[in-house]
Length: 162
Image (cartoon, rainbow, N blue to C red):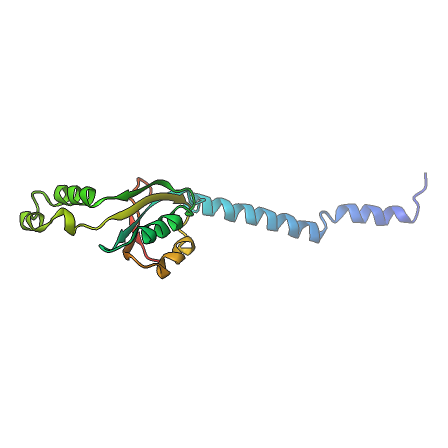
């Protein structure tokens, strides 16, 4: 059998190995996989959903219409649970319990009438988004807005500022 003139060229091509472009693609994929694995082992994981406690403290003179407007905004939060208007009596009982044995003068100075009502709701998400609460800034009857991410086994608690 005689060799054709194309056979030596084909044999030379097969001895060259992997084409450089293919080698570069494989190297990039291996590097990206190694980097992703390294980030995962270093703690870079998807952030789990977290709970946030939202409290809107109302002014003493808040009207029923103002309270309804605040409630309507809070109902639009992502996954709102436990939306509740805490009465003055509830706030008074909580304050007495919180300061019992710590500051008896402060407890004695409190009255049910002096305590503000407040809306309280819990919401869950990966990150807290202040945008749904933006309408509260234009509403009357609000004394203070408080957003807290409670302590968990995985992360410390935090006050969220909007």
